[in-house]
Length: 263
Image (tube, rainbow, N blue to C red):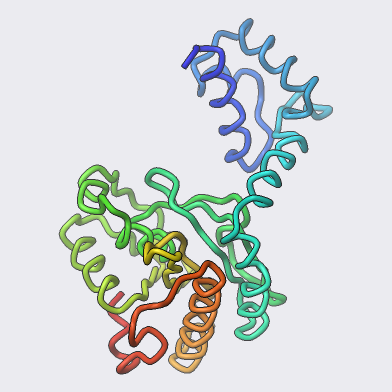
């Protein structure tokens, strides 16, 4: 790929993930782009609406990227089918719900239904989380074709108090997810947050996405856990059916709650 194209994508992706506006100096240093080249690149992107600058001369992602995002969302069947179902789940359990796809070594949130209740920090639309620490990521990791190779290549980093840092521990958990079809993130990605996730299948039986619910730890009770699992199973089955697929036998009727608590 031409250097100019790489730099353009690096700049857009960095601004999109930064979460705040950044200075010209910071961009030049982090992206390793000479200041003169960066200035020309920013000027071009600002003219197209992909980058905006505030009164303090700090840069952030521009509204034009929404056009690209909407183009993807409009053509992604799984997203269009999932959105109303996520809204139903969020309303039923009174927690935020999301749909994620695998993107390299990350789980990318492509649809989201917020909770009406106050929620501590969780992944929102467009957010990315590690495959090894998020419940959505673990589901996608468990059912991707080259799972073992991906696990071997993952950088296991501590992002919260319970992040998995042992590859063998991760492998054991992935095996359990393949059996139970449910994954947990127990304050492994974000302190104070519990995630529960389940897979979505397509018409040929491949897992193409995961749906999850994020729950503040202080609201995570056994009764609420069962309620969330029930809503997720129903939602995953409905999205799968919309894609022309079928959930595996027994998915909607787990043998016991304890069967699901090891993911």
